[in-house]
Length: 565
Image (cartoon, rainbow, N blue to C red; front, side):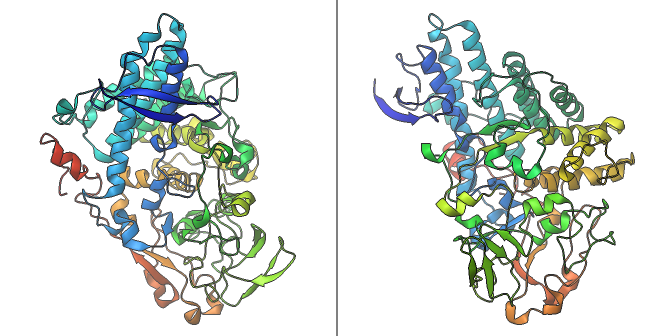
């Protein structure tokens, strides 16, 4: 029997060693020699914690899918982002990679589940069951990703010979979802609430949290409510709570926070890290290629709890004043020190003070000096640390799901069920109060939600999800499931005018942005006082689903392409 050798390095947080796996050829992925003891079982499951199986990312921080939303813009336009260009097709390499990586994880989970009992003679049943629960939960997570993006997909629950694999058919999204709920329940019943150590593994809370997220995406409001409530009702060791500081949660200091339900470790010493230069300002040695959109900045409400187009506190000439504190934690405020330099994109600020160097320096963060300084004028702050610009490497753990999402999921599900009550207000206010650094009961110190009007609560929830989870990868799927992509992703991305055309009296923005009831901004009235950076396009006749990768359709005549691709 032909075999090949794959070297798999496991993060030190799981096990500090590298092991060689002796595997069969791809159409027979297990061998007689592996899965024979607890160490090998753990190695197989640990390999499923690779970041690529959980959150596909660009070279920089932030979820890959955020680039498909109206929250951020990557300099490069249509060629780098066919989803917002409306040119998505079945030959897209990113879509193919997403599909392949998901099924790769599924295949590895299936191989583990088929062979785990080889170790029964020397490994306790409790250990085998716990690892089985992890593998089944990881497999369920992959299918949840697939059905939310592709709709109906093949449901494969065993290793298949190549000939059989090339003949599989789709299973309906609804049928797969029924299966996923049983998998989430098995994992919740068989995973510990805590491991009692710093090791980051899937837990009972994670199983319930992923069940809640999947149910939300499926519009199964009852299950979303029940699963999120189950997470909220966990007590004792392994229970969750919001981190005291919103900003610190995304720093190294927050990696062990009780808010984090699951994160995937990254560590520069273990050579598991990203290159953050696209996220860094040009003064700090970066490229300023990944930018918050004006739309994201305008989505943060004022401190009176009103949107900027309804609040007397808002001043477009001083857009960071009197705003939800999460704005300044997410986007670098103008005229503040950031990564050792005063950050200002003002076209006349050709020099700035460097607190790092103790002197004035050329301001490469204004386009009057550096043409490729941020086109929108904004730069992300959330999760970025000084060490990133010092070492040109970032290794903060990748947060996959956290407790704030559970609270807002609970609120949304209850609202959709017509069950808005005091518990909904409590869940939302915990998140909002944390942004202000106060307790939810201190209702005079932050804009507490008090209304029980369903329509208004729905608007609040949607805005809350956007600003709370900015650049965490949730916005794109929210636009898809709320059927708002056809509106949000057909508006142009706007930036500051070229320096020669910039009216200094209107810096940084010429007026108050109109924002509609769906939270979508409209910049059409501002004419030449803004610059169109990119004209988005979204084809609502097909893009609410992704295309099945063309190579899969060509190889398998039973795979029917999604409509209009």
